[in-house]
Image (cartoon, rainbow, N blue to C red; front, side, top):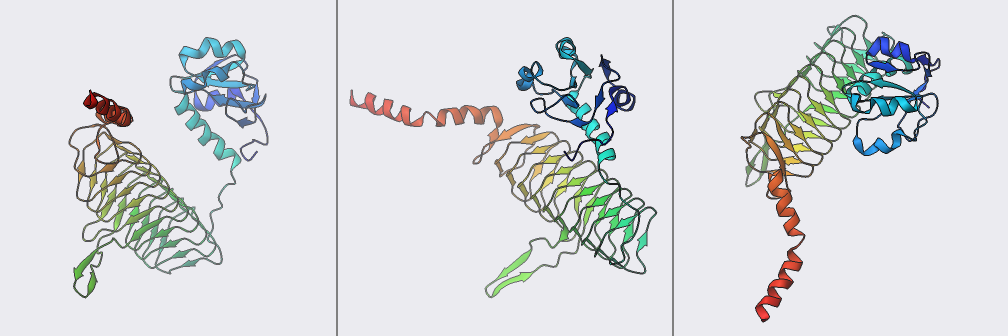
Length: 345
């Protein structure tokens, strides 16, 4: 397994690093993280979703991470780490684990990389094979730039940010500290702006850039277009999945998360702490307040002024109402037959 430690670690060491209450087995050694149903005697597993509670009794895991309500049941089968939020504990465990099982980056500029003489390169920076850093770019301390990346003229990459291989980071665009941009992402392509005429379309030059905050993660093959005049803005803590399209002059508030294949049309403003489900579509020039949650495959055609969950391909509505209407829709054929029978009487 790729995530197996060369030297198994004692549970006491995990507790020292991550906290939690350990029930039994401080000297038990762990070599891998695994799901409950795939774990073996050297695995640690976690239980956060109640639907998998039945697996707790049958798992072969050496240790399980559980909430306080399941502490007694978990301890009856072996070692357990008790924590108020097992899923959060699992997330931190994966970070601790990754730092030990993944190859460490080497701070160096590969001989085949092309770095402009006036680019500013911070300390402890890795620039991979065939990467290009254009004139005036500023690369912060501890940045990792993968093979075949292009960082455009005047772009800024904040400290500790990582660009995976084959990222295109456009001119004058910027990203803050501790960001992660996955392979194939394009930051700062032209927005889709054209003036129609009888002879065809006249291009509107996109004069803005893309401004991305700290602690932002952007998925593989996602595109974030530069603004037409002002910048497209992605605030701190935003998480964007693979294959997402963000059009020009969109503004996404802090700690909002977007799942794969979602698309947001131009000049829409999405508030903080929102979630956008996979394949959802939001048309242009709308405003979504903080705390809006859009279900998968929903199409948003008007602004939303109240927090809540919204669902439905067309028209969308508040989730509880949509579920009632969807349930009714499934009965339409039966209702039609009943009406026909009544009409014949």
